[in-house]
Amino acid sequence: MATDFQPIQGARMDDSAIDRLLEERGYGVLSMADGERAYGIPLSFGYDGDDRLYFVFVGYSEQWKKMIYADESAAVSFLVLDVDADGGWRSAIVSGPFERISADEWDAAREAMADNAFRPELLTEVDIREHPQVWVLDAEEKTGRAVGTE
Image 1 (tube, rainbow, N blue to C red):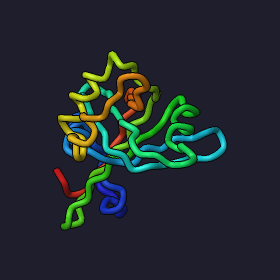
Image 2: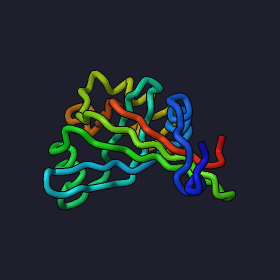
Image 3: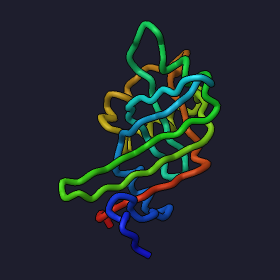
Image 4: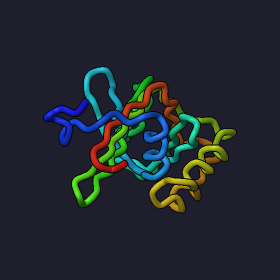
């Protein structure tokens, strides 16, 4: 049933439409919290098509905010957004547990990032031998909405 708010609110996306968006877009915003404050950062990601999103933390800041918030966040959410020039849009929010992967899982993460990350060549060549800064979000919940894109 359409409402007056349909152009703003959009229509619910089914799981296959959400999966397509995750496969087509290689970047979004990861939201974490330390118990008191929230922290959102734009990141490229790899999606394995089976409810796992992989992230490589590269770069450096004096505060190491990404690492601090990641260590404090048992669960996170990730927003992927796609807007076209005609006013159509799609968005999906993926939520679930967030943890650092072991070196043994790097091949699966590298493959997922090579498939759909933004600038995958920058992420798949990272040396992670001893202390991987690679994290995985296990998608326990996926929701999405869209207007004029299907």
